[in-house]
Amino acid sequence: MARARVRGIYATALTARLLDAGHEVVDASPPIRRRFDAAFGTDPPEVRIETSGDRQGVGAHGDPDALGAVRDLLTDAGRDALAWADPTPPGAVLDGKVTETLGGGAVVRLRTADDTAEGYLPYGSVEDRVETGDRVRVQVRESAAPWTDRRPELAGELRVGGDLVALEPGSGTRVDVRDDEAARELSGMLDLLDLDPPDGWRAVWRPAAVDADTEALTAGLDAAVDAAEELRAAVATEDRRESGLGVLDDSSRLRDAPVAAPNAGFWVWLGRESRFGLDDARRTATATMPGHHRVKAGAADASAGVDLAEALCEPAADAEFPFAVVTDAFGPSEGDALRIDHGKPDGRLITLGEGTVTGIDSDGTVAVEREMTGGGTYDGLGVDRKAGDVAETSLKEGRWWYPTTYRGRDGTVRGTYVNVCTPVEVFPDAARYVDLHVDVVKRPDGEVERVDDDELDAAVAAGTVPEPLAEKARSVASALENAL
Image 1 (spheres, rainbow, N blue to C red):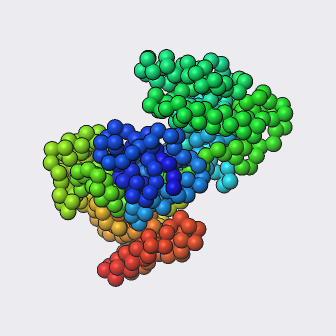
Image 2 (spheres, rainbow, N blue to C red; image 1 turned 60 degrees about the horizontal axis):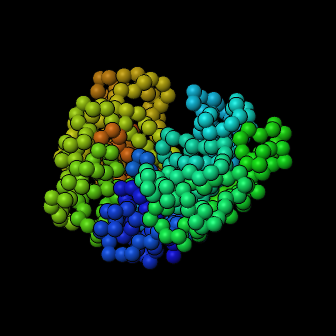
Image 3 (cartoon, rainbow, N blue to C red; image 1 turned 90 degrees about the vertical axis):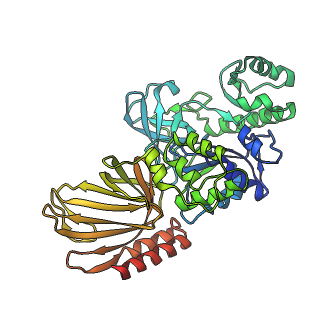
């Protein structure tokens, strides 16, 4: 069983699922403590689960064995939950090469198993001057979900430790606690425990240390000291200072795998079906409106409105998701710009373009128009794309497909492309889904063809599309082929 810490908009639902499966939840927030009749410990977590910055999914990082124990729990809320290993988990030390220098930092191409990861190294986090072409050894401070446009944040000095105490190069003691009295007490804790960090390191007490007992603090510091010694030995080089990080000599051999990887991690994209599955789990602990997580995922300012609605009355579990109400409150509205965010089963996100909302129906259908530029042909249709063509897309909330009809300037239909995907979600600024490869096209002469089954088969073989999700995609494509 794993010991997990959970934070973010999915915390209540995931806490319910973790407890039901026999896992231990530690360092619980006050709302979680109120909602569950359970004992929540203060021991350091083996796994940290947090909502991604864009609220579309969660990241889980920590001990590899503990991660394996909770992976299925995070991915079986619905068929549209997809998971990918994180090549840059926090704490990992990686070699890389600077490919670009920006105003505040450098872009580093990191040497990982698939050699595709990039990171961002702020100039203030490394002692040396950084130039394009430099070989560097860096530590990951903060990872980033693969579907976002953020790069993992890197640093040029080591830091080790967990939620109670960390160690970093320096002297004295640092306390990251706002409570002055608690900070003074923690400042003298090393003397009280009769423990000393390794030479050249200092202890950094975290906010969670305020409520931890002496035994937990001692265990946390002992673990940090052991980790510091192991990490320093792993990254040390003959020609570098003891920390072993920063700009390396041009003759240094860059390692093709992590220099040190004290943690592992993975990211989970949660689709619409999965969010509603997590609603059911949350409902076992507290009042939950239909679409609770769907609404909160769509707009940062929606949380307060959802919480107020649930506090005023207990929604019926079988009530319909109030798409029209949510859209009226948070958007999109007719005339707004709306992106089409086209997720890929390997974790990437591609924006197909931005169109204008031309209509919204209460049943969850949003019509979007885009004016096309000239050049090339339309995928699958074999028809030339001409300047002035209009793409008319109909996006219906919750549907496993959506059509786009291309028309010429004179209104002539140039073909229709029906994309098979995970259930569409229409958020205030973007419609989102994950493409499932197989599609159906209808050409100008009326010919209907199902395309890209081979790509779906390849994705299943590669492990990026689970077989149940692939079967759903094939079933949808067959129904569309017959209907058109």
